[in-house]
Image (tube, rainbow, N blue to C red):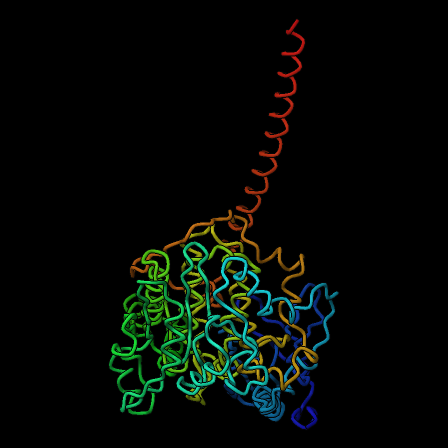
Length: 549
C-alpha cells in the first residue's frame, strides 16, 4: 500500500496551530506517511512534528468555511488546527484518521526511521538473558539456562532462553507448560543474593473444576525451597476471581498438592477497568471548571490512585517475603503478562539497588516486560481519548511507571534516573520512532525482524548526550532495601504526566535548574576543600620534618 493513497490533501497553507503554552502560529500544514508537520516562516518559532501513531482521536468543527480539527494525543496533549476551507479540512481529517490507525506493524514509522546520530551501542544486544544469568551464576549453581523455547514452540509469549531450577530437565518443563496458562511455566524472575531467596513468575495452573494436578509442576516449584522452609504464592486476583477461573479451566494451586506453600490473594484490577480509570482521570485533569469539590470527586471516582496503592502493596508484600521472611515467592494472575509483571518488577526496585540505576532499570524493562511477553502492541494501541475501545487495551505499563515515580518521589536520592526518564518511556511505549515496544512478545518481534529492520530505543537513550537529560543530580548509590509508604496520604497524582499540558511547568523547571547549579557548585567547592586539605597535610608533614633533628 502506498501512503499517497491515504493522503487526500498533502499540504494546506494559512493553517493556525493552537497548543499548550505556545502562542498561536500560522503556517503550512504538511502530511507525510508518518508525520503531521506544521511549519511557520516566522523566526524563532518551533515547528510541530507529530507522529500519526501518537494520535488517539480527532474531532472536527465547522464555522462557515473555516474548519477546526482537534487532535487528542496518546501522551494526553490536545492540539487545535484551524484550516481554511471545508473540503481541505475534511480531507486532512480523514487522512489523519487513516494514517493514525494503520493495521500493519511493518508500515509504522520505526521501519522507515533512519537515525541522524552515531550509533555507539546496539541496544538490541545490550540486555541479553545470558548476561543477566551471569549476574546470578556467580552466586548460585541452583539455576540454569534452558533453551527449550528456542523456536517458541513451548510458550509463544516467553523468550527463547529462560532461567529454571537446575534440578528440572527440559522434558519436565514441557509437562509443566501443558499445566500452565499459555504454556507459561514458572521461571526465575529475581535472585536475592543476600539470602538466596527467589521470585518466580508464571501463568495460572490449569486445575479446572476437577482439581487437576501436575507432579512435575509441584516438583519444579518445591525445588526452589530450602530444607524446612515455606514459600509464598501471591495470586494477583481476588479469591473469588480465582475460583471463577476454575470454571473456565484455570484455577490456583491446591494446598493439598503444595503443602509447603502459603497462598495469598491480592486484588489487582486489569483490562477495561484500568482503561476506564485512565479515561476518567484524564477527563478530570482536563476539567477547566476550577471547582474543588468537582475535582476531588472526579479524582476519587477515577480510582487511579487506588490501583497504584493495590499494586505497590502487593509488590511490598513480595519484597517482605523475600527480605524479611526469608521465603521464596511465586507470583501469577491469570495469564502472567500484566499484573504479575507489575509486581515482580516493582519488588525488584524495592530489593535490588541495580534496578534503581539507569542501565539496571533498562535491563528490568527488557527482562520483566519485553522478554516476559507483556503485549505492548495490544495494551498501548490506544490511550485515554479513543472512542473505539477494544477489550485488550489497558494502561498496565503506565501504572507501573507511575508506581516507580511514587517510590522515586519518596526516595529522591536512591535513583540514578529522574522523572523525565520515566515520562520518556511512557511516550515511546505508545508512539515511537524506535522498534523496542513494537509487537506483543519476542516471537512476534523475531518474525518482524525488528533487530535487523529497526533501531532500538536503548541505542539512542544510552548516548552520553541523552543520558545527561535523564540523570538524577541528587543520586547517591544506596545499597539498602527501600520500603515505600503505601498509605493513601503518601500517594500523589503524577503531575508530570497528567497535568503537564494543563499548566506550565516553567517555574518548576527553573527551580530544577537552580538545584542542579547548586549541586554542581557544591561539588566544585568540595573539590577545592579536598585540594586545600591535601596541601595542608603536605605543609604539616614538611613542618614536622623540619622540626625533627
